[in-house]
Amino acid sequence: MEFPKDQIDELLSIYPGAKQMEEGGTPYFLLPGVALPGGATPASVDLLLRPLLLDGYDSRLYYAQKPTFAQRKHPEALNWNADGVHILSRNWFAFSWRTLPGLTLAQMVAMHLGAVR
Image 1 (spheres, helix red, strand yellow):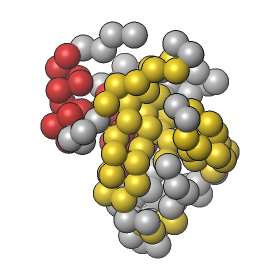
Image 2: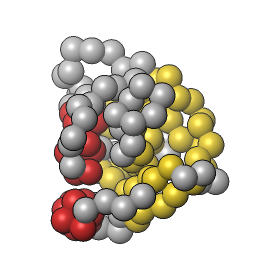
Image 3: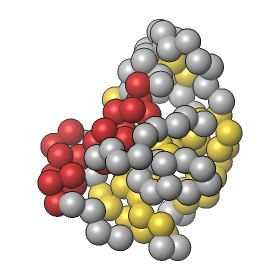
C-alpha cells in the first residue's frame, strides 16, 4: 500500500529510522527506539504502527515491550488487549485505543501516545 510521500517524510522527521514494512498485505511502520512519555519503564521501546482500518480500529500502535507509565495522567485505564501478538517475526503488545479516520501517519502515532501521557 502506498502512503503519501509528505506523510512518510513527516514521520521520518519525528522518528528517524522509521521503516515501512508489510506482512500479509497489511502495511506497518517500524519506529525504532521511541522515547515514551508518562514516566515509562522502559523509557524507550520499538513501536509498530498499523495505519489501516482492521478489527474495528482505524489504526493500532504496538509496543515491543509492555511498558508501565508511572506519571500517566489520562483518566482512562489502558486495556492491554493485544498480548504478544506475532507480527513481522516479533511479539508485540497493544492496548485498545480508538483514533480518528483520516489522520496522517504522524497524527496517528501522536494520538496513540496521547493515551499514555
